Amino acid sequence: MSSTIDEIDLEFFPFIRLYKSGRIERLTVLPTLPPSPSDPITGVASKDVVIDPAAPVSARLYLPQLPSPPSSKVPLLVYFHGGAFCIESAFSPTYHPYLNSLCGRAGVLIVSVEYRLAPEHPLPAAYDDSWAALRWAVGGSDPWIAAHADLNRVFLAGDSAGANIAHRMAVRAGAEGGVRVEGTAAIHPYFSTGEEEKGTLGDKLWRLVCPGAIGGTGDPRLNPAAESEGALKGMAGRRAVVFLAEKDFLREKGKAYFEVLRGSGWEGLVELVETEGEGHVFHLSKPESYRAGELMEKLVSFLNGASH
Image (cartoon, rainbow, N blue to C red; front, side, top):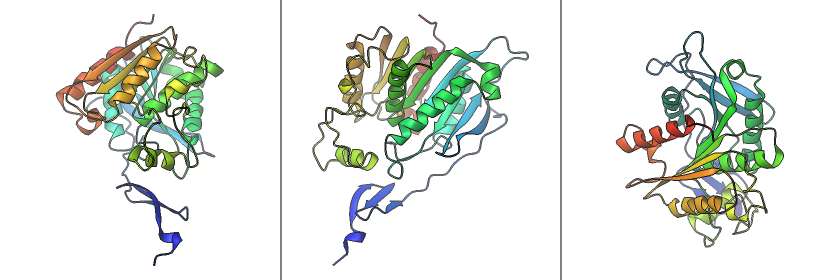
């Protein structure tokens, strides 16, 4: 008979196994890619910065190829990677090529945030790290940002759990001030109605990310409809776009987020963009596909759109 110390409590296969003893086993170690002083295809320069060594919080910055001397400053995009709050990295082979390409196509300066992951660092660690990175970015202390970023055109974006974070940052910016946001892009956002039955993957994953949390319909981290009165109405930004995919298992939750935001009294303009025949974050798994290119162009158009 096995002892309790060896019993599995929760598992997010093939990535993480959590034992009842509290021991955490990461089953898959994701590789990372280094930054580049000049990408041979896009001309984009990238570098890594440490924002808070104590937490720690870091980021990878992407600077598009600019004319010399630069004719004007470019928008600043703060990007939050996905991965269910517990996997992936700003430095991974998934995100580095994607953001390098987005930077080159959109001509924006990108800050890709490396936040702490659950279950070693349960929520709100990812939110706190992301907020620290956002405040650092708009503070303009980095030479690239100071020289090239238009801090009147700051965008937030992310996919899956990163879209959840982008939303939370926009709400916090509206509540606390100090960050002027132009728009937010939520790509295949990870939200929930909080109604998953106990024992389902959704329930297990949330308990992995936020141990001890009850969740349910009243948790605004899961369900944007549960935000405190006026929080959505006061959300920072003038524009928002929600990207959905027809075959995404989170599609209905993302659509519900769009409807909640549209009916919240928020004075910004919110748009819904859906891709037919594709699943969750298909643009990352199939970046060379035609539909991934379409999504990229729509995101580029959003980032380069005129202010209202």
